[in-house]
Image 1 (cartoon, one colour):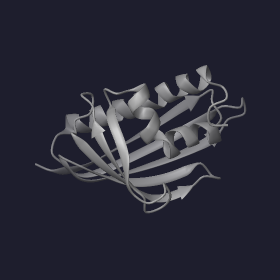
Image 2 (spheres, one colour):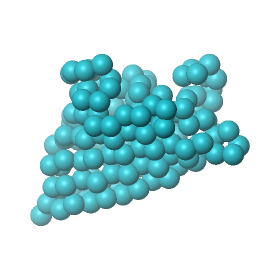
Image 3 (spheres, one colour):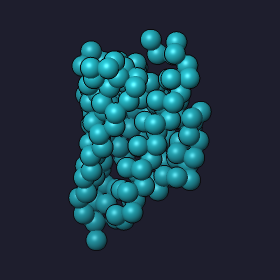
Length: 152
C-alpha cells in the first residue's frame, strides 16, 4: 500500500556553507556521476538555467532504488544556502527535498536535509534514498577538502 514517508538528516561538515551549497545544490548533476556513479550514472538539463523552474534528468546507479529521476527546482536562495526541489521517480508519486546549510563557529557548516515522499510503494526505498543522500554529502565534503580551490 502506498503511503507518505518523511526523514531528516543533519550533517556537520568542515567545509563552509556557501562552498558546500554550490557543490551540492548547484552542481550536483556534474559531481555525482564523478564521485558516486553507483548513485548517479549521468545527468543532463531538460529545461532552464539551473534556477527556479529548472528541470534535470538523472540516470540512477545501482545504489538507488529508482532507474531515473526528474528533479525540478522549486526554491533557490544562494545567499542563504537554501533550496527545495521536487523529484519524480518510479515507485514514488512525488518527493520534496529541502536543503538548508548554516555556517558553524569553526568555519564549517551544518546541512539539514528534509525529504517527504508521497505514494511510496516500498519503505526500503526511502531508507536507501536517505543513505545515498548522506553518502553524497560525505563524498562532496571529501572532494572539497581534497580540492581546496573548488567552488570558492
